[in-house]
Image (cartoon, rainbow, N blue to C red; front, side, top):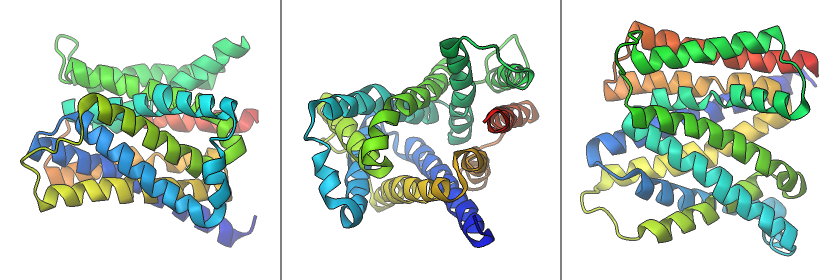
Length: 300
């Protein structure tokens, strides 16, 4: 791989990760200023994002975009990915933002790396390396600091925010595992686009998302547009291009820019304040990603 492509890969992965961070901060702003329900915002985000992602696939893979519905096996895999994986992840992640903040939710979601490592060790019946065990200890310490602010006698993070953040991490593991076979056949953007659209439509029907909140103004719709276009269309397409150019290991490390950017933007634009124990917890959990991913790279 030449240096130009490597540089492009890092830039694309960085752009995608920062786009996801921007999306989280926009979601937090909507929850703070318009008191939206996480169910409504999740449904709207997923439906609109699904449409945008599918439109992006049409110029290059017009036939594949719809041929995915031709075989019953592919349809079942797609439905499982959309409902058990993507919908779970998106709903719990936005819920975690609503009951905490975008930085905390994003950092807790990063624990998916640890959950995946533990699951793979159990599944393959192999012992975890010292690096992986250290990552688990750091993840536990980081979660403790975020949840209690260093004081075990009280919870500084709401119970709902903590549980939803951990479920968001589990959702990432679920949709990652469920997406692997069908993405291998149909491509990431096509599968993610349909998954977003299916999950969003199901949630929209359940929550009657077509009933619009009365207090939405032009700023609110601009924030929603930023979530869809910057956080999803740009985020997914740029990050996946980065994965193609530099590989998943390096791209995952660059993905740590998502919690970092969410923390910085949340503090700068929304006035969110973080204590030293909370920031230490953030650093511990981000460090677990480095330990886990670089460890898997060496094993490979």
